[in-house]
Structures are given as structure tokens and as C-alpha cells.
Length: 170
Image (cartoon, rainbow, N blue to C red; front, side, top):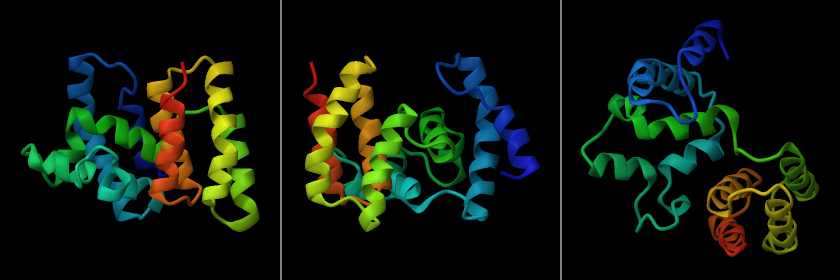
């Protein structure tokens, strides 16, 4: 990140922010997002998570960006919207998972350059075990594993297999 981007990042309150903190973060969010987009500094897989309808299970054929637009928010206003904060956080920090899990997925991907459906089938039990051992909330972890699987080059349908597998954890 550039110095200006780091300055903007410091002004953004991630996590469970109050309404006032979220409002104060909106302009820096928009400016930071535009700067990252202008520099093409957001990894393609992360940007597609927002813009590609195939990467939005349950989106009824609409991307996450299209849903913002259908709800009346478009252009730069999307980047300043309170609900966009989680996407910006993902753009910057990646999937919110323990580093050991991220490393396991990336190591598996490293051999072929992407995750095959067979790799995904082999990783699903390990992902479920990681959710249990780290005491992660399955509904939150499922989406983070979905993102990670996409980042590792899996097709959306394979990433959805991982997501559904995690959602089944009790």
C-alpha cells in the first residue's frame, strides 16, 4: 500500500463498529477502494467475489455489486456504504481464517496452480476439522473458506462444495 492508502486505512474502523464510527469511515473507505482499484492492487479473485454473479451463491444470478445497485446504491456510493466495509476488509486482508489453514490450502494448490475438484474433496474434511478445532462459527467460517477456495483457483461450484461442507458442521 502507498503512504496515502495506509493513512486512509488507519481512518477505517473494521469489526463491529458503531454507527458513528461507520459513518466516519465511509469517505476513507471510498477513497481507499478507488485508489486500490486505480492501481489494480486488489487481487483478481477478491474483486470477482464482488463483481461475478457465479461467485455469489444464493444471489439468484446477481453479483454482490449488482445487489447494491438493485438496492439503489451505485458507483462510488457503493464504496462508502456501510455494508461495503466487509468487502473492503476482504480486499485488503483476505479470508479471515487461521494462517495454518490458509497455508494448507495454498500448499495443495501449489502443485497444479489451482485446486481441482478432487483436491476440494480431500480438503473438505480437513476444513471441517479445522472449524471444530479452532471453534469457529460455521456460518461465518463457511464464507471465509469459500473465499479461500476461490483464491486458490477452484471453480465456483467446487468452492460451493467446501462452503456447504462447513455449513454442515455442528
